[in-house]
Length: 98
Image (cartoon, rainbow, N blue to C red; front, side, top):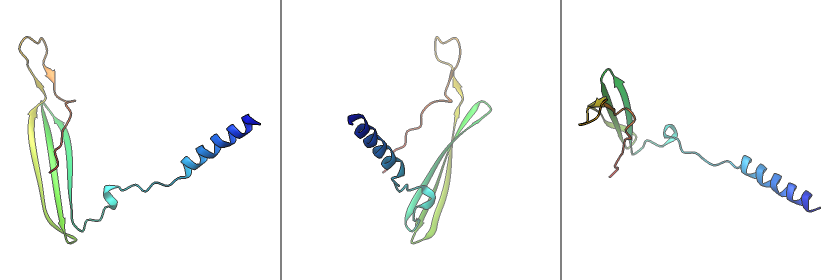
């Protein structure tokens, strides 16, 4: 009897967690009445890495301004005493929002 109750309770919990609809708020569905959208991209081009930041600002439902900035860095650096260059392709990106 205890095994049946345990099995039923686990099944109920599993079904409840699978069927619960949590509302996801994707960027595509956000209201752009008054918003700022910032997109970060990293592109490797030859021996350089391009860090591209694009911004779009909406005010009262209208696109107010758009701007794209690109920072170019080297793909690998030579450190003193290192036998091979150190790759910068996997360096994390940190973002500060004010």
